[in-house]
Length: 597
Image 1 (cartoon, one colour):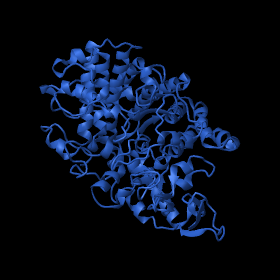
Image 2: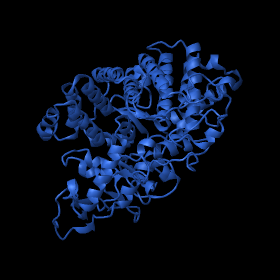
Image 3: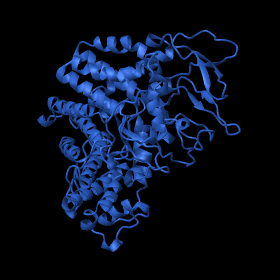
Image 4: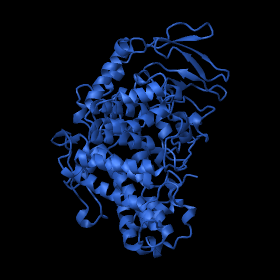
């Protein structure tokens, strides 16, 4: 049973150290010493108590204004493949996703927002790290070593997410004192170097997936994830991003492409050679297992943000839309965002990822508890990776579904290895990793053409790089990592403008989209609620027969074209959110916004 963010006395224990209070209780820790007798020497010299404190580092993630209800639903939009439907409405939500966020944004400008709660998690991590180092004797292969490695990794997760959303941020790697209560921003280059070092240490402390009782689920930190996460940060730190003086790579020689790509390649190869993680044989099978909440370690998912059944809004935000309670869910939600309308038609028709990724229907209002799939128009698509109908639980909560958020999966290890190997060793070294991704994507009878011939034809570094950029698109649409990758590739504005042109071509049925049908035909299968659709494929323009009903597939796309980013805004000048005004005002003059905010 998932229980990390049920936190409870885990949260209580850490609060004893930082002098704050909460009212959660977990039976796992009911035998803890009385409150008055608990201090750092007791907590961090006792494995069970230290474990509770480590778990408490993640508790802020589950709070409404933190990851749960603010960071996850809004960060990562809009891209060339992902569109948040709030962008079509003027207001604070639109500002967040179409590159026009303001410090006074009413959705975010609260003192308990994600920024504050991320730093709350960092403070807890700092206390735990100090305590375990002082009292726990952490060594590789020990329980205290595993706990220290987890704490170092959790702190790195918070910092990585702070920097991808805000750029330069204050660096706190020790518990707060009166002298450090107010701090200015620190160069993200400095923070990245510290995180990469910390994760190097953590990778020596934590076990591989399933190598210890502590690493049997993807809700716990394992060596494969730590190494993969370290590789991700190396690629980001050496990539392009907006600095106060413009979009560029870091000037720090320690974060050079040569050094960081080499580190990333070594870490990814270490994970690959370990044999402790692998791609699920079927892309659809992986996403079914995810929605079924299979959290066993050793497969494709490397680490997931763990939400208890009554917390978390991943499906609530991103699932295929359900208009009412029905046979699959008691929570009529989903559909706040989806793939851009071009995505489905950009996939190769034989690619098995397409129909999992992009869904052209929603579940309509239920009659006698049973809903049918209903077409919604070419202007509205949903992320098929998230489906209430694939869950084993029947969700009844008003606001939360409790499904974890996948933070990293093995496919990223392979594509990072391909990207780094291409840069350092050439396309031949990258080819095996790209082929492995595509072998899973295409039926075996297509491998000769779609895998081997396709990849072997990528004879230059530029060709291989462009293919990898496209493969990220096909593999990860709907996982909201695309924005970070486009930024580090210096492709954000370019790809958004390309998407605007492609949307216009689709709108007018010209260019690459000239043969996309304007009418669909549908009927229902024997179960009475599953659509049988004809006309989705390019060139399917004939009427398939009188048993099918016609549906107009020609809705205008102007609103999406005009709100991928706000007209008049340069997305490369708005790669980050501003620090919210409430934190600027409370910083004693230490915090300021850059980038013209």
